[in-house]
Image (cartoon, rainbow, N blue to C red; front, side):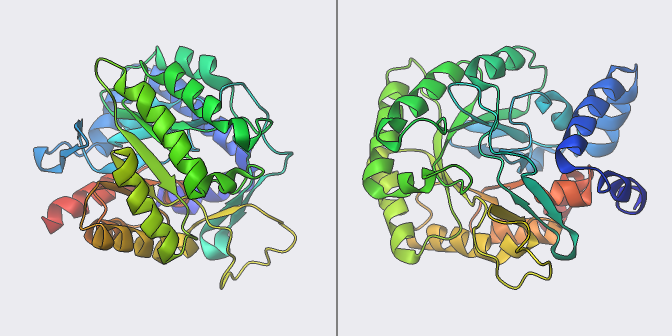
Length: 342
């Protein structure tokens, strides 16, 4: 209640990227005060062995994670884990640093409990992420979301994905190939089967050369039709990747209460995405006969939303927009509800 009625209204009066910096610095400074980290951990973490999940060879302390995009540069994964998240997905990371799209590029839609963003893979590149990951203190699982530089033509995209994979290999626990973000020019073209197979086979080839290969997942868009989702199922089988993240943001603007015309293009996340994401999860799980693990993300604001995703076929869930709207107790609420529903 404190967050929703006092803290959030203050934060929502500031530009979203400014708030992100405030939150990042606030967590770091607060946890530097003796005792604050331990108190926060005791309040927000739900420590129960029944929450543990063994998925694609990794042990997750609980099923609730932070989706890619919140900690792009691996700058606050340690602090986020204190808030009770079982995994944090950093990135999207590209080979070289890039500024992303011009500002303003992220917009809140409070009437719809949503966000529209067109960030454009803004990040400081591989080396900066690797340096930050050297400070890892958490036992939470860390994922690395892989992307290409905007200036890299699609015909040369494979090299970018392989470069980020190689650069992050020793620093993260699993990888996500991101070709479904709508905010990078022509990126979604890489969802075409030929492009996608080429990227996944190339990354898998490098992976299989390692003494201990790591899980590779594919992040898919919520706007794919059934034929395209069938292709995803085939690609997972062909390339032998370990799973799918469903879903990324949507380019649709159905039934929004907010006038979105002045905002322009970008990916929509939050409550309007909830049902779409759940249906993609359900279709992939049912049609594939649960042949691979699925991480469900999209419109999770409440414990009930998360449980709905799990019942549809997700093995783990991730939050992003729900975290921004609901506050730091979201993982705790979801984990407690999962225990109650066991």
